[in-house]
Each structure stands twice: as structure tokens, then as C-alpha cells.
Length: 483
Image 1 (spheres, helix red, strand yellow):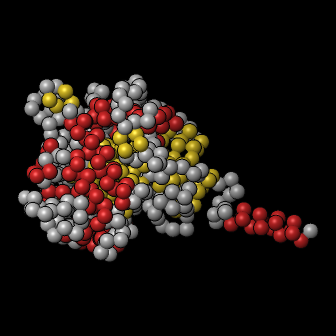
Image 2 (spheres, one colour):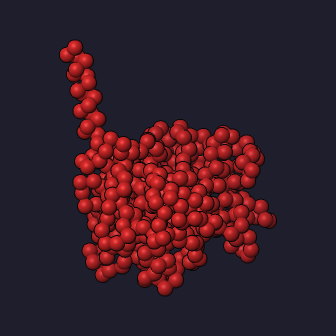
Image 3 (cartoon, helix red, strand yellow):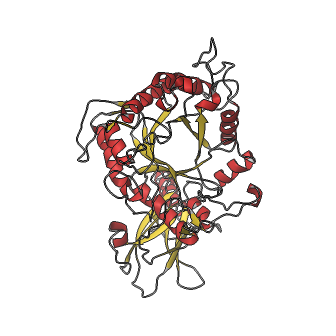
């Protein structure tokens, strides 16, 4: 009898402590789902305020930081006698920049996502030698294996930057035949073999594709969709077209978009945000046809993305609309089974790239945050039912069913209060428990209203809340990719 009483008491106690203060036993719990991680791209050399840069990236809710290893800068310009390209301790190498960047990232709790690109001339330059790439990747993976001279480990290795562009890999076409794909396949397999040999659980990310292509002139190049189909041997109808296999774990793209979160690229060649669901199906079809060899379930990432904002860019997306679109972009990508979005950049650059999470200041200490920073850190959307299902068809913004989705800033579980406002105050309409990845979602039945409610999410017991998200439907609108 005592044992039965104890079990009943323990069950009641567990049920009681699972309900937030002021909540109810029917509070919604989000089931386990795939995460939606974020990262920020640090391009170029070492930032002047490196520690503050990494601290700001971490504070933006990012899980990772994307960092470049410019092969031509680390390796000697002229290959010296006796040089061993597979030895990270060879004195001809200069690892100063990646050492500092990777160490700073790890010190601030960020996962380094390392892109190797730009071969020295003796390794082929734009016509990079896959064998030489494999040797350099072996040196880099050994150096950042976690057991070399006290340096931290790198687990995520990205194969080249935008290999569908001539400025990174050439030639693209020869006599109207796409030959860059053939070389890139060899590059991916060579680099994968090298980094897996150091740690079998290293992760290889391939793709990193520029969104759009052009078929005219000497600089013609394929768009992300065409390059993916050719590289992974998959037709537009998801049929196998060859017997080639690539060794990698994650395919990635840079879905820059000249419109909103559901805007599609013109024609069948490119990949903007609205094309990502189709690209996701291509990648999964390639995995089913065994054109991808991986030790894990193959994922799709967006390893570079942003919108220029107005201000400061005169042609950029209006500053508050950019924040709304960023939150919705994270949801749309998550819904298309994309696991990560990398933002370009932390701070505005001089024109033409003014897509930072912060306005440019005299230095990073003086840089002011943009509204997009809050949306990137704590994304939250509230969409009427038809807007969720048919986002590009002038959806009915007056329906009673509202779908809410968000991710907590630390990507951890919390009780979330869903709130609405039509005036100055906020009132709670629901309570939801974010899952272990910080993701929460719920479908609510709210009365129809002639005025548009503003909705937000707040972490219960704290002052932390998302930006407000209007239930008013916002149509797509054209803005240049880089304003």
C-alpha cells in the first residue's frame, strides 16, 4: 500500500511541476523535432575586435560561426623543395589566421564551420587539383583534430565556396558542357577521405552554391538547382541519371532572394528561399538512389544568406520588414527540413553589402543593433492557416486558425507564453513548452477580427520576448539581392 501511495504521489508531483506558474494542465508540449540552428559568417581576415565579435555572435543565439581557410594564404606561394603538404607542422605553412579564428570561436562556445577554398597556383588555382586539395585537407584536419599543439578541434568541414561560380572554380562550361561538376565531385571525395581519416565522425558539407546562374557570355555558370541535379545525378523528376556517388553528410546552398521568404527564382535553374523545398526533395532523392554516401541522415543547410536593409542601403528591404521576413525565413527553412541558416554578416560593410545584424559604427563597441538581430535571435511567426499552406497565393488573413512557430534564443526548452495585442498591452492566449532544441509550435483557434492582432512569444518568468509579428498578410515584393 505504501509503495502504491508513493507512486501515485510521485506521479502527481511530476504532473504538477510540469505545469508553469499560471498555466493549466492542458498547456501544449512541442514534440521532439529537428533543430533549427543559426550561424554567422566571419569573412576576410581577423576582425579588429575578435573576442567581441565572437561574443556578439554567441549573444545573437548562434550555434556556430562560419570561418574561411584560404588555402592560398596558408600555403606557400611557390612550392619549396621538400615541402610536405599533408604535414600541418611543415614550416612553409602559415596557419596564424585560422588558428586565431578557430580558437576564438571555441573559446566563446561556438562550433567552427570551416570552408576550405582558393587553391595556390601550384595546386591548380581556379582549376584546383583534387589530389592536392585532399593533401591540404588532411593537414588542416590533423591540425584541428583536438590533439595537435593544444589547438581546438574542428568537426565541420565545408568543401569550397560557391563552386558553381567561375571566380572560385573554372572552367564551368567547355563547349556548352558543364564540366565543373566533374571536378567538384572529385574534390568532395578527396576532401571527405582526408577528414574522415582523421576523425570518422567529422562532418563534410558539400555544395555551398550560389543561387542563380547565367548561360550567356564567357562567365556563364549554372544555378544552384542545375548544379545540384548534375552533381548528385538526379533529374527534375527525381530519377537517377548516373551511377556516381559522393561522400558527404550535408548539402548546402546560399538561397539569396530578391523578395520575401516564399519568393522563387526565375526559371528552373536557381534556388531562392521559395525553391528550397524542391532542392530538399532533390537531395533526399539522391540519398535514396545511393548517390550520397554518409554515416548519418543527409541534411540540407543554408550556409550563407541575408537581406540588405534600408537604412542604410537605399534599395534594401525596409528595416522592420527585414526583421519580419527573417523570422519567417527561419520557419520556412525549418519546414523544408533545413537544419541551419548562416547569416552574412555581423556588421554592415560599406556598399554594396549592408546586410549586417548591426549597423556599421566607428568600431564594434559603437555598432547599434538592427531590428533583424532580435528576429534572428528569437524568431517567432504567427500565420493564418491558409497563409501557412498557400503563402504565395494571396492567402486569407482573416481565418480563425493561427499557426505559431518559434525558437528560443538559447535553443533550449522553456515554457513559452503566446501573447496578443491590439493596443498597448499584451495578454496571454496560450502556453507552450519548447522542446529540447528550443523549437515550439502550436495551432490556435482565435476569433476573427477586423483589425490585425500583433502576436509575440515570451519566455515565462523572464522579460525575454520575441518581436511582435502581425497577423496581417504581407505580400511578396521585389528588392535587389544586394541593395
